[in-house]
Image 1: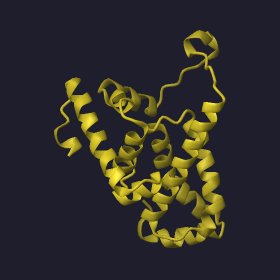
Image 2: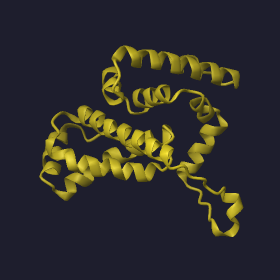
Image 3: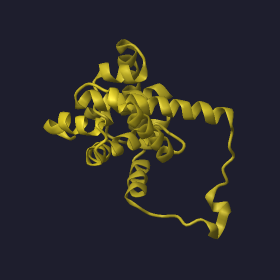
Image 4: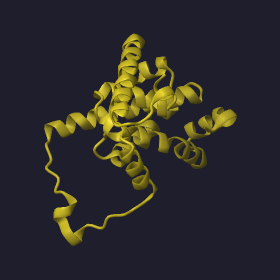
Length: 190
């Protein structure tokens, strides 16, 4: 988080100052990319770039504090992701598995791949896959993005009561799935 200097950084970014835009981007890009990946965006990097293009178009009209900015940006991310799901639903693609491409594909190992492998080995990714799209989106926004229930409701365009129900059911489903896999979920879902 940028912190106390956020109002000044925001004002400078709204004036188009490159260093302020970079500061905002560096602060929120991991959040946006993580949100998109956690919610199964097919090409999170591409969708993330669309989010930031939209942000730049609308930035001069934004008013609010840093928490409100993050909520606003995740609303844009949610909408771009939904747009992408709809677009891909109309244009089906049949990707070729990488093992069929042979030598033409170079697989890279990086921190992200290692982290995903650890989560997969602990059953977390599979547990998240068992949730509905809305449950997964609500949990990611609430837990990873650290948004309040009200802010999650704004991002998702749903009433707070619906978001609370999604969170309750999502946490319960995660607890059941992880407990079945032998994971201790005790306080993680309370």
